[in-house]
Image (cartoon, rainbow, N blue to C red; front, side, top):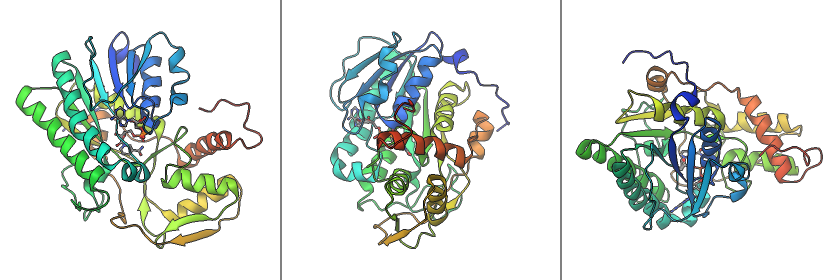
Amino acid sequence: MSTVAWEFEPGDYFRGKKALVTGAAGFLGSHLVDKLLAAGCRVVGVDNLSTGNLANLRAALKNPLFSFIKADVTENLVLEEDFDFIFHLASPASPVDYRRLSIETMLVNGLGTKNLLDLALESQAVFLLASTSEVYGNPLVHPQPESYWGNVNPIGPRACYDESKRFAEALTMEYHRRYGCDVRIARIFNTYGPRMRLNDGRVVPNFISQALRGEPLTVYGNGRQTRSFVYVADEIEGLLRLAAAPHAAGEVVNLGNPEEKSILEFAQLVARLVGVECVIEYKELPPDDPTRRCPDISKAQKLLGWQPKTPLEEGLRATIAFFKQELRLPGEENKDVR
Ligand SMILES: NC(=O)c1ccc[n+]([C@@H]2O[C@H](COP(=O)([O-])OP(=O)(O)OC[C@H]3O[C@@H](n4cnc5c(N)ncnc54)[C@H](O)[C@@H]3O)[C@@H](O)[C@H]2O)c1
């Protein structure tokens, strides 16, 4: 595979085109909608608002290029128009959500993915599936390249998410092989940034909201397990590049940050940026929680000319500002950081 030095300008690929974004009111979906609109793309957003929030689309809803449909993509979705791009992001994504909505998660990744692939076939659209690093389960190979098949417990409490994403990937590839559908699969690693929900149970909102409230930061296990975090703007750029790349049909690509941090280091950094003392409360590690996860992004670098750019401190400062506003803390009430 040759290295691509790609001066990527979204407007060159998306201006005047039409995209469907499922999960549009969610964290990643709403940022993707904003970027597509900024590139001059017409966008239809679909969401059943099960974990999303219309407030995330506040700016988009004022844009004449955008329309929103409240619908469940596992049900018959009648859209009498063709699309150039279909971005399938609808799915609960945080462990708290997919435990609560376990069967719904399996359905949106199974039936929902099939419905959208059928639509992509009819429209001859490029189909992009938002998959996840969770397909690697508790990995035995570090860092994880796309060629690694993973170490997943098929009957564990996370299986509703990781196994259904694996099914979604398999289905997507079958549409590519059998029907020649132009598909691309993004394996998204932990992404953070404004519009995450305070109570979604993931480590970034947990630590920031606890630090801002002056509470101890909850660490599961001994805190030596690592995670790598990519800032939302970088992740969205990766998704756009993957959808636009002329040579990426049928490809699966990791989009994440290869820079690992232990959970304890991360807790200390959040506390420092919020300006509080780092007090940790240790709790038992939940079952099947991966001890280490880190992407090998050499394929994204070569195929898409992509790698994360935003320094962790910079991304965290923007995220902290957003959470301050969500918590209505002094000093942030007049800024629009959403
Ligand atoms: N955020 C991350 O770090 C991350 C990591 C890996 C993968 N992903 C994937 O990216 C996608 C978006 O994740 P997110 O973090 O924005 O999550 P999110 O929960 O904020 O957004 C998901 C959106 O999908 C909607 N949705 C769920 N089921 C639906 C259905 N049946 N019909 C229509 N809409 C439905 C929800 O209401 C929500 O707005 C998901 O597919 C997720 O698996 C995210």
